[in-house]
Length: 199
Image (cartoon, rainbow, N blue to C red; front, top):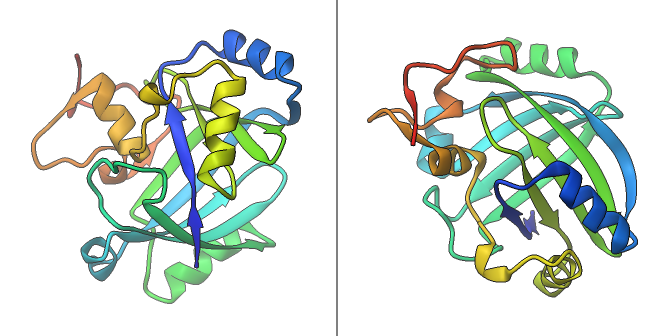
């Protein structure tokens, strides 16, 4: 499994970050588009901080297994290992796992725009009820840091948490409720659940 080296910068202005990307010479590879994902999490996955994700990315569908060193907010960009393959069908892959006895625990929607800045991938992520954020991913932390510098971002503002942690920056989450993973559905046409209270 490879280590996923990435950081987030939260609560960004999309027009501002697009201009910064253009000024840095980045190339937009995919426009802002809807992403559909299914998360599969069995009891042993939760115990080992892992999960399976099937994601329709607009131009391809990926099947990913992720394992994290900690489910708390990480202190560096090296918290997650992943194994990912491209599959031919989102719906059929979901059905395979259902038939195998591993049904999804959550269906989630987000929107993503993908840019390439040198050897780094920079994505603009938009989730329901959440201020936009960007994620920078690259083969090494040095490349990630360099991309952040090119975009005029301070490493002190880098955030290493999962999307559940990003929600916690913006909302008080009810006790005993992890966040999006505990919602059977997370879509743009839903109202804010009672478990989420704006700070």
